[in-house]
Image (cartoon, rainbow over all chains, first blue to last red; front, top):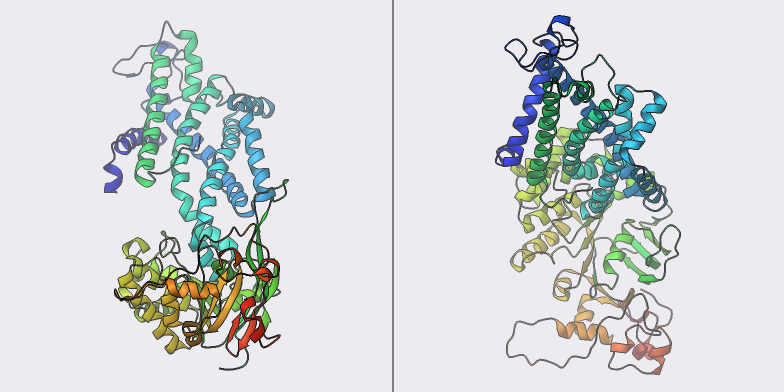
Length: 274
Length: 332
């Protein structure tokens, strides 16, 4: 632990991320106002004692909505990274173990996914399946598969060349057992680091999709959605855009710093996969 | 020595493809092992020496069925290990184990000593975790470590200690045969003798057989009963240790023995019988593979590859110089 907190990136990133997680946690139990409660009288109010971050065009409290939006962002980050990691690890391990045809197939599939611009792919998926938060997560998650597959393959190939793998084979351990007990633990730290980075990217991507109206649907609170609604009122009520925007920047910066800190402490030799 | 060999290797060949891929054909073959035959008996210490790249490590891995041969057979206790189904091979693995050269890369850095040493036991199954733990603790004591080391990670040990962990892992299933692939060459000279003596003591105690792979003739002469010299994938001389040191018959063996450092400053340095480097195993020379470096080479050497011929009992050599004195047809 001391090793991690001795790293400035990690400490700052941890503190920033903790604020987001705590805000999200609190919002599950309590928010200053109901995040979706409209109030015609309190429309478009600037920051004040009762509404520290102001209100939107329906009189909803921006602070409450930013807090609820944090939950949304965390869910998006977790689900997309989970999709990418679970499928990517399986594909990457298969590529590194079988080599040849399987390896070629996995790598060319990755190239194919990388070949499409990410946002375009996401728009394609969400407009085919219909705009919703779940479909947005699916779109981002699918795009993450090759990221993790390539990283897994690259690191696993070097692990497979180490002698303790041969030793395990000589000891009669099955190939699946070798993957589970030797390869996986030895590739975990670069995957964890990449996971945190992709977590931050997912928050940005979801905000982007929601901004385009393809992600989270109203009235649910999402940072990207809030920015979308704010643009019409930019000149009259700039706080509507500023605070969700700040929240995105805060969370993404925090998680990225956390990831950099993890990389510095866990794996100084690691080269960024992308 | 009993008559049935523990390991009988017959005409073993291993070629590795060079380059190539899913669509492309390999553009050459590395001839790592070229038709090797020998036998190892129970309780015997069989030494395999040669320069780097002569195929001795490949041969060790073939004996363990860690890689598949291009052709040839390895019989372990009368059973062909390459035709055994996987499940039966798993059972056979408890009778043959391997010690690796590099004590750093051969231990998983993310595993505790208990898991590393007990892994073959775990793979076999049948023992509870507690039983495994106590067996591993006994083994650690046996190789000169302590039961308190069970919960440590490999990075907490020195090179010599790590190699002892590797020895304990090999012993854990009570094998009959241990392939020791350069077990001491990565260690400091001061630690070497300790580990070698440990291996000798264990052999006496447990009636083990070793296939001892090394490039260090001094070490091999010290611990082995019989010695085979490999050159470019083939065995060129095979003899018991006494005959080997006293009357080597192959010019290459002679050169190797002369190259062994001797702790006597007044001893006269004899001129080298050999020059040049080991030829490329992708494109070995025709005839005897040693002829470009051999001081005694004559025409026949450049055309025909000499077979390994028994010249007296317990001594075979693959060299045309000995063609006349051979007992025909005998491969030891």
